[in-house]
Amino acid sequence: MKLDRWKAFYERTKKEKDLRFKISVASLVIVLLGGAILADANPFRLLVPGTLYPFPAYDSRDSVPIYAIQRESGKLIQVEVSVLMDGTARDRVYRLAAAVANPASGSVRNFKELVYDVPYPAFNLSVQKVWIEKGKLVLAVDGASLRHELQDRFKGEKLENMKEPAALLDSYFRCLTLTLAEANLQADQPIQFVSYSVNHEEALEEYRPFMKFSFDARYPVK
Image (cartoon, rainbow, N blue to C red; front, top):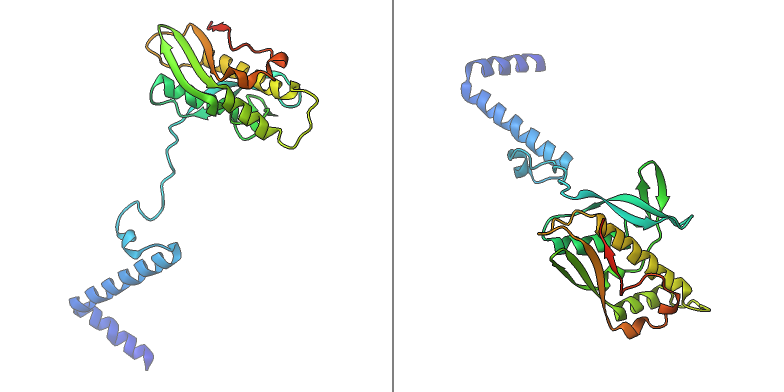
């Protein structure tokens, strides 16, 4: 009996165009609703090509070599990190300062082997202003900000002297200077010197006896 009904229905579909159209529309609606349920998406999005599944985000960052200190050996190493290098030359300096402070949350790939860099406080936040003029790159840093970052890092620790905090300052600014000296900042004129200007110098007095890096020197670019 059921087979006869299906046969009769099939014959109707061959003769009646309206019936075939209704069946096609109903099938399409079922497919759309089923796809929306499976994809957990608005069914209307299925009607727009390319909106159901997100496309991978384009990474506009460049692979840039920066300097870091290997945690295990204390050696100076060069590593590759992804940095957004658009904008002005000053923008690039700020971003590179941030990258040197924290290349990759502790781990970076040194070309052939995985190494671990020394994590720094947010020393890059102390860079208040950047001047680039006639081949000279000058970074104005705030000594009070550097002291705040060091005090926060060593909070609760009993230190015999300021040798360890000073070593962090030394290694960070050494790595930053080398990185900036070799970076393609795309300035109007090639950078010839990197130097620093320190505001609130008195904030660093307790660290200076143990520091090797000089904020007063002018570092030539090769």
